[in-house]
Amino acid sequence: MCGIFAYYGEKKNAPELVIEGLKNLEYRGYDSWGIAYKTPTEIIIHKEIGKIGDIKTKDLELGESGVAMAHSRWATHGGVTKANAHPHFSENKEIVLIHNGIFENYSEVKKDLIKKGHKFVSQTDTEVLAHLIEQHTRKHSFEDSVKLAVKEIEGRYAIVVMKKDEDKIIAARKGSPLIIGVGKTHGEYFIASDIPAFLKHTNKVIYLDDNQICVIENRKINFYDNATNEEIKKRIIEIDLDIESSEKGEFEHFMMKEIMEQKETLNRAINQDPKTIEQVAKAIESAEDTYFVGCGTAGKAAMVGAYLFAKISKKQIRFVFGSEFQNYKEFINKKTLIVCVSQSGETADTLEAIEIAKEKGAKVAAIVNVESSTIARTADMVIPIKAGPEIGVASTKATTSQLAILTMLAYACDGGVEIAKQLLIRTASQINDMLNPRYAEHIKKIANKLKDIESMYIIGRGANFPMALECAIKLQEVSYIHAEGFAGGELKHGPLALITKNTPVIALVANDDCRKEILSNAQEVKARGGYIIGVSPTNEEVFDFWIRVPDTGETSPIVNIIPVQILAYQLAVLRQNDPDKPRNLAKSVTVK
Ligand code: F6R
Image (cartoon, rainbow, N blue to C red; front, side):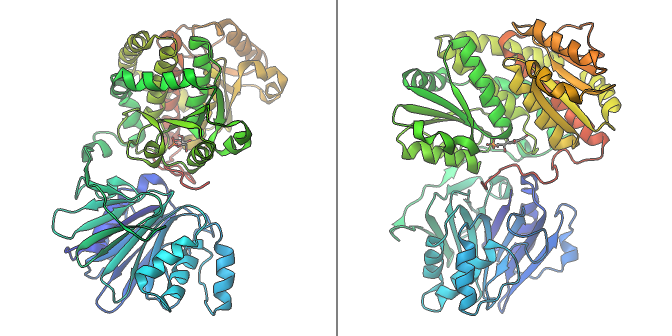
């Protein structure tokens, strides 16, 4: 989603530097971008629609400056236009602002400002905030005006603001990530929505928390609690992320690199202190009710988790999408546990579920990839999945690691965390054998056959039903082919009417209790002319095309998704889509 990157320091090429940093946030997904920098006499803004990747900074004729901010926008309020792109000026063009999140009550504030004579040039909520700060500067200092203005915002935000004639840059956050990078030279600071923006310059960071404000001036940085206006001390943390892990290496796209990394990432997820898993398992056992919560792909992994618990630990877990959680709030109390699954740890819908749970006194556990994220820092217990930075918008390696942790958790509730570990070590080694160029070539044959189709379907049963839904997400987001997942048994209740001659249907066939039934469902499709692509350890008569996967028992959801990730990737490339940056989507979904 939107990206923020700002620089304050001695370097005089700040405008160029923030553009280069913004390029490292491209994976978050955006549709326009812009920068602002200060010269001794004015603030200059440059905005563009489209991608920043191909921009050569020398073509932009940028001036020299030691203070600059850059933003990539994912449209929410108002279309994709230059006027709506950030940064936004205040009425008098003295204040400039970039913003992530949503200013929910902006239209009332805007009406009030219009009455006071303000004129707006964009349809955004962000511009309203720039004007609101300016309105306060008529009576207060710049710093106090920012503090007053953010108090009026309903919703989540991360902002960076600067003002002409003031050697100052101010940042504030509530619910949307903002991280300060501490530079190598005295008084040099970076402000970003995500660490890769400044990782090249520093690995020393300070996490801004909700309702905190950071003021950088005269080469010094100070932090304030916005509720009390008291100064607060913040810790500098050294992070061990290397630049290489956020680069493509020999691969053409991050998505393929991350699919191939699953041989190693699974092992990292499994080989962690079992006590971390056992602690959450104990909390599940003692809770009266446990909810697994997540969105999109992470939601599908959470849904698989509920199936694994029913089967392995004979425990009932409810699965709820983050965006639907509010409908269950009447049932949440001090004896409830919610386990959130999230790659980024910043998903607004999941965060809202946590807020509801906390208000009701429930305990929160999180299964996350980004260990420094808001979800990780808000939860009472955290199981890191240790997949490393996932840059491709389509989640791949984080999904299989989330599934591995959920499998360990289900076994841990039955006292068998070591059994799970051995099973997963075998699975990882079988995946290692499977993930080779020959395997990808075999799947490419089916991608070539499917590349011009309009619709396809995926069926599964048991824990492979949510995986069928996940296969559909992968195919939709990068190939743009209409794809839908169904529980095999549901076909005859409606979707079978969609099957005509050669309609492609992927059947996820695990060697489990559902095997016979899912094969009968495949027969039902075949009888109506459908074309069956079987993902299965064994070849079956009903298959028109067979994609072999190892027989791994309870971890079949992990091995079944991998060939479909490869298929989705290859369809994207064949259809000339960018698999790393699907249209309209964002990596970190920080709006509700
Ligand atoms: C799809 C995908 C999304 C995310 C969803 C939740 O490939 O990645 O569906 O799973 O937006 O994001 P996280 O996991 O960051 O909470």
